[in-house]
Length: 201
Image (cartoon, rainbow, N blue to C red; front, top):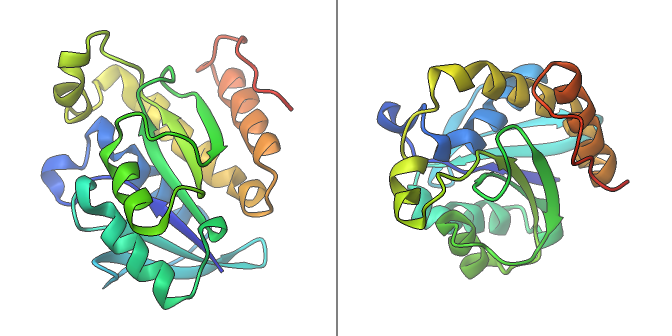
């Protein structure tokens, strides 16, 4: 089994925040692959299903971002999963909007959700970094990530989440580069790319 985790804050107040794009991506995956119903479990909500013939557990921690690791550790412990079985979807300030990168381990770049997960289960899990852009000044970051996406961004956000959901089978098969490239090419074709910055194969 693989554990797919979307990072965000629970509740309607935060639902449209840039910080919640991890939640949005996971919800899109559940919809696309007919995985339902969500139920309260593991200090959040979760749902089990299959994607590409492989069993998955989708988890949205209900602990608020800074304590995400508690929920992840509980779910991973219940199913006796290793760090290699965990894939975390999260907002990424250092990537332009609608860009996606996958990486294994590495630094947490000040992301409190990742920091919490690493503190609870270790650092060597896969991260799907969903670009939200940077406000340009470090002092503005907290306000920026807790703001809703601008109206002009919503079509791009929804398109990105749908494209991630369409191609998540590649990620589940361990084809991280193919997943990145497919998303880049599809977003580009849909008018949300610049034709540059193609990920390495």
